[in-house]
Amino acid sequence: MLIAQITDMHVVAEGELAMGSVDAAAALTAAVDRLNGFSPQPDIVVITGDLTDGGQADQYRNLRRLLAPMKAPFIVLPGNHDDRAAMREAFADHAYLPQSGPFLHSVIEDHPLRIVTLDTVDPGSSGGRLCADRLAWLDAALAAAPDRPTLLALHHPPFDTGIGFMDRIGLEGSDGLAAVVSRHPQVERVICGHVHRPVQVRFAGTLASIAPSTAHQIPLTLDPDQPDAWLREPAGMCLFLWTGQQLVGHTLYIGEFGDLTLY
Ligand SMILES: [Fe+2]
Ligand SMILES: [Fe+2]
Image (cartoon, rainbow, N blue to C red; front, side, top):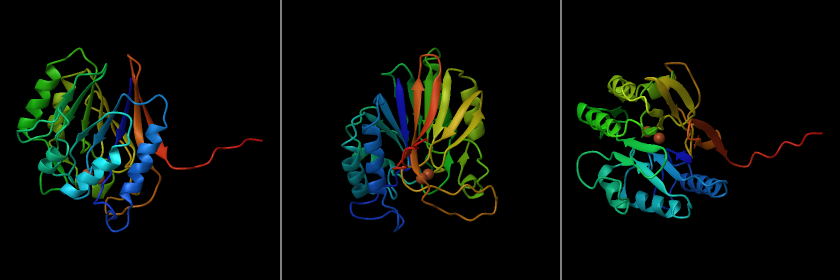
């Protein structure tokens, strides 16, 4: 089984640029083309939040238009730039998304690897939050299938990256998440977005990783006082190959970099 993770597309309305400078639509189209040309095709694409830049209906309309050519099926979860109500409306045909209740969590049972998505959004805040209700939901969702290897997906990483300005808008409640995950050793990996660059760490007895954005990236700086910054490093996505025994993680860059000719 092959799972693709794309994240942080920050799509705006048709014809507009994200932050006045980033052509997020062209970037997402390039990501979709890259995936459509990949063989084998992913069984599922998990989209880990910040789907749009402002959570508005016209941005979700543009997102649906841009995702329509993607051959592989996909699932979505929200990030801090998303709006739950607008997302529910835009993805009303996505039956795994709850149509009521406060959170957009989901469980996808259709594949050899079970996928659980967790909503970390704290409306009005760039950081995320896992309250007792959300942790209890996750604990029960994982307890329902202890023998099924599981991928857990959420927007805000439950760990500090050393990148000060992103850690300051991190996840409140990550200790609670670690406590839940450590009780469920079937969790093969925790995948996240939000940080716009690839990062990996050991977390609660499993692995946790962040995928690069399909659009703009943040510079790697480990200076805690560095102010916010963005750059045009290569966009990318992650691919996870489930062999039946192991989940192998890859980073796939998007763009034309040229083949190496050896003499
Ligand atoms: Fe983002
Ligand atoms: Fe984010």
